[in-house]
Amino acid sequence: MIARNENRPLLLANARVIDPSRDLDQRGDVLIADGVIKEAGKNIRASGAPEGTEIVDVNGQVIAPGFVDMRAFIGEPGAEHRETLATASYAAAAGGVTTIICQPETDPPIDDPATVDFVLRRARDNAVVHIHPMAALTKGLEGNEMTEIGLLKAAGAVAFTEGAKSVMNANVFRRALTYARDFDALIVHHTEEQNLTGSGVMNAGEYASRLGLSGIPKAAETIMLERDIRLVEITGGRYHAASITCIDSLDVLRRAKDRGLKVTASASINHLALNENDIGSYRTFLKLRPPLRGEQDRAALAGAVAEGLVDVIMSDHDPQDVEVKRLPFAEAAFGAIGLETMLPVGLRLVHDGSLTLSALVRAMSTRPAELLELPGGTLRPGSPADIVVFDPDVPWVLDRDTLKSRCTNTAFDEAKLQGRATRTIVAGRTVYEYV
Image (cartoon, rainbow, N blue to C red):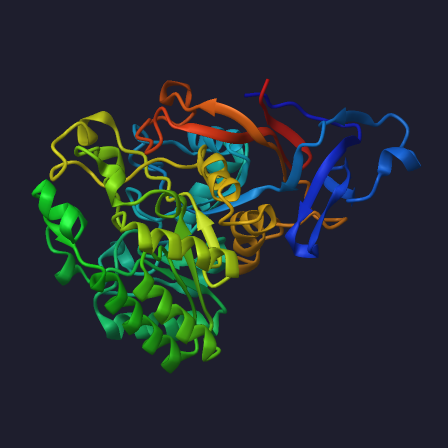
């Protein structure tokens, strides 16, 4: 990890430049100066870079807008033993993520302007990447009383969510959508009908039965998504499904989009790359919420990202320490880290033909930046120089002891991967370089 101030212009030369915001995928260079992108795409070195420019030949590697991770759980404030804003930012930089959207499940929750301000100030002082908070949708994340959406947005909250909870009271959720609409605020909702989920710990089906584990039916997700879509239709609010995992939910999402509703969705990199069979003999690092589904659902999810039905790929970064993961599967905590592995695992989908590189970058950078109305996700001249350089082909084996996150509960320990970030630039400043 490095962090140095680069005052002179920087030319990243001899690259494959991918910018989905301009449908750009071509050989060329990227010129950075004063923290912004001056030019991206054409052969700048041939025409002459400004005097004093530092020139770095990236030898055909990919240059793309830095990734915007739309769903990451960070412990600060209150659970710094799991993750701090600083350690999360180091992990993000190593994975090519230049913007983290942190969740409100902290102690205290991010449910008032003072806590939003605290997170923003702490991130500004300690993090090497951009960090923006989502604020709680209800006070204390208790699902009863709506937060002050207008004040929270003015304080810097980029969206509103209950994190890994669902608002079970339909009337509370309807009012929240209505108020959010008046402030053009985005509501990001975890879709899980908790009465159906019960004490389930993995996807309901034959495999759960063989393992002797209680299951979570897909209907728990789809029923809540159906309810939410009906309320979006009534209110006209902006709605984003936090984590879609199954074919039935994709059908609901498609119908909503076909009706012209303001509905978008994310899928986690875990659900795009893994299925329930990967749990094997009770691997608790693969105990996730929502749970991993069957292979048919995983493949359909990847196809939905390829066509743009699912808008965003996110890490669902959820650090858990060893005390709550090294337990019997039914007792272990849900969650896996993902900031550092989102890109290399996403490249699996490129190498197997499920996605193009441009589609991957669009879902991990351009679309989340657009939905959250952030300035990243593009290489347009004049935009902030938030950039990732990555080698899509270099082979390596993941060793969780080398990860930057404070916790190492990765679902991909010892996985054979192909491709990784080699340089991450935030506001024109190199914050990570793989040597």
